[in-house]
Amino acid sequence: EAQVTQNPRYLITVTGKKLTVTCSQNMNHEYMSWYRQDPGLGLRQIYYSMNVEVTDKGDVPEGYKVSRKEKRNFPLILESPSPNQTSLYFCASSPRPGNEQFFGPGTRLTVL
Amino acid sequence: AQKITQTQPGMFVQEKEAVTLDCTYDTSDQSYGLFWYKQPSSGEMIFLIYQGSYDEQNATEGRYSLNFQKARKSANLVISASQLGDSAMYFCAMSSRSYNTDKLIFGTGTRLQVFP
Image: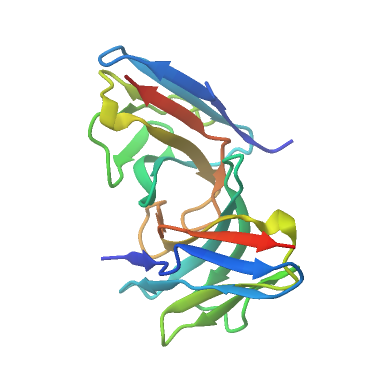
């Protein structure tokens, strides 16, 4: 089944404790993105990647890191999480820019 | 700058009736795509329908159709014969196809409630 998977689905952590949210797609898509969703703001892009080893900032990159060492994986790293990073995070992939993006199930993160 | 505006925070519709969810956009790109996604209470993002800026005909997918008015920069979603399962948040989004970037710009969403 073609899909985007994210782990964990739910995470409660404390300020400053490094964490990684994994994202993997099995559709051989070149393009992958991370978004965060906050009430009243819709979804905003954090980072995106156009291919292996090619990443770039989205609209809200502060406090986040990403890497793309393999085509299928695009982890999101929070080196020192803060409460304002409490949000619902989505990973997405697409075969080409401007195409439909396929979203993972979301990761609900709470930073205390 | 690119922007998507959804002016209806919430909408109510009776089952089996049609409903229109509004979306206007702003872009200086000539080539772009418009999308609608559904987000049920379970949280996942479900792709509904796509319209390319050069598509002359309005997109349709089953009970969903996109009323694309390019001159007005609007891309309204029409759901015909509403069902209780249509109750969800609906997001309009836009992508640029002019640049080698892969970003969707989202609106703030419209919460649709379908009642019996």
